Image 1 (cartoon, rainbow, N blue to C red):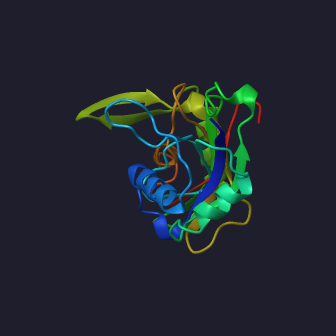
Image 2: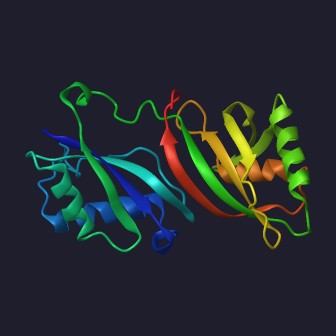
Length: 224
């Protein structure tokens, strides 16, 4: 059965929707669009769609990815137009590609292991760009960067340094105690880092730093 990869945006109007909310939004949109979606088997059949990576509550995205499977071949442009006609404001399909026969049996998103982010940060006290850049250089020079993660009521120490692939200050982004950081961070099974964790680690050198807006720019494979 034909499969498609769709690139979509998650914008400010739906910023506070979590991943399950986005999933349900797509399920409803597919039903309303009349697209002949394929269903899984078993006692609780579900629409056959899968997301490359969950996007957290409060985080927007410029090029998120979802794969869906239909029961009949429909031109990609028509798939895009029919979904955009019924999706809510803030979610927009920007590209739609058919999956080739060679890719049909592959894990379509298995190679994606990192993501680029743009993070708007603020500080409680005035700071210079040079001081922020020194803090970034200090973090990147460390063999380990340990943060505390809490899960199911238990806290454990995690070294995030191997998965901070790039970190820099966006040029000329200082304004009213705010600035923008550009990050390339690991994601997926090999190692996952959240932008908030990097900001937390920078707090050792930049007191009072907080992440105010997080925008995921793109998902990437190692050779991208």
